Image (cartoon, rainbow, N blue to C red; front, side):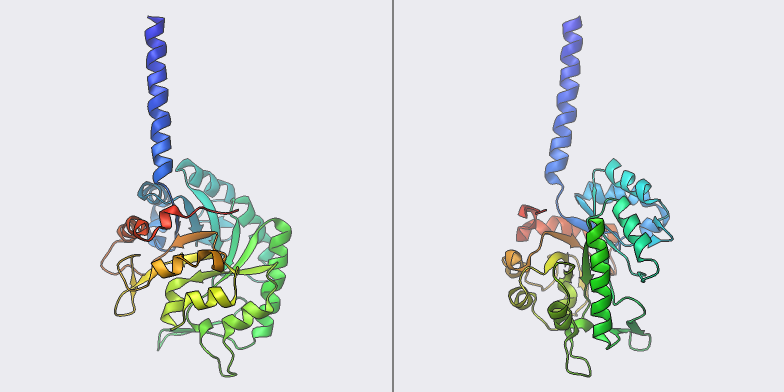
Length: 294
């Protein structure tokens, strides 16, 4: 009888171990919670569970406010991600200023993230025209370079890496004939500041990601992977016109260590449906074979 009990216990252990192994094997890639921001606002735990079930391994946060991530302390949020077998990777800290940056860095670190991401020009330098629905930025690029270098130094001392995330306007010449993203790349300290390239917005600007990888090798540590339909709108990965095969072949030149799926607007699709389509299609381009680097 004892032998039978031991055999049953061994069988249960084998089933559990196999289930975890299979689950781990189908988890790959990262997802930003910006896509599912409405779901996170009303049901954060259920949403993280569903993102994990789809198969995403890494999480990018985009919901920090008053010292909390989606209403949770950094430690609570980290614990929630662990509960559903996902890992904190990066956090967009849109409201960063020189007054709150130290506390933000502490909170991002406590939550277990590797990357502190500035998603738009900080310190009031981001502009938005409601009439034309267009984004832009202040032309004082030296101020922005100095600011991100300073924040980058603080992040490095705390054991984090600072990244700047682009939209389309950084790739367009300003009134002084300067392309802001190139000015940032050439004047920020690569030991302190690197970049999260949003492949959609680069393409939207009429620029070529691969050209930038080759001109500024090693500077694009994270990618935002999202597609563009024939009308120039957001689309799930693999459902649009962006040549991910060509781009992924230049991963080494870019310096990419991780990639994150994002879709700012999902239109007729529910956000969780959209990121599932993207995750399924990532395999078509070989994203599931990407080996992450520390």
